[in-house]
Image 1: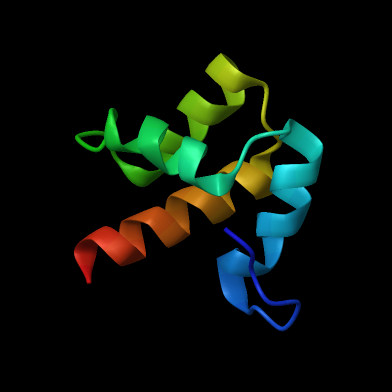
Image 2: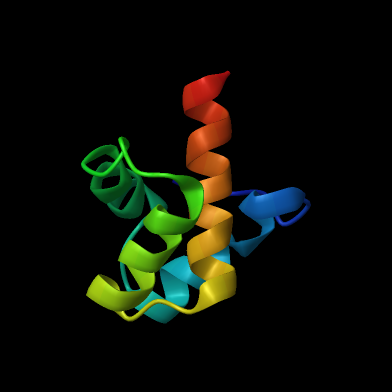
Length: 71
């Protein structure tokens, strides 16, 4: 899933996330689907502790995922 270089907000982190962690953002969204019952910061903590992701990247994924889910 290619993201335009002009992406704004959380999506602007996606190219860096994919390069740093070697997985497409869809992989991370699928993992977040599995913890969708948790609060925002609990989901961030999940990515940080279970997948060794940095705070900024984890927060960007969670923010975008929740915005898409919640409409």
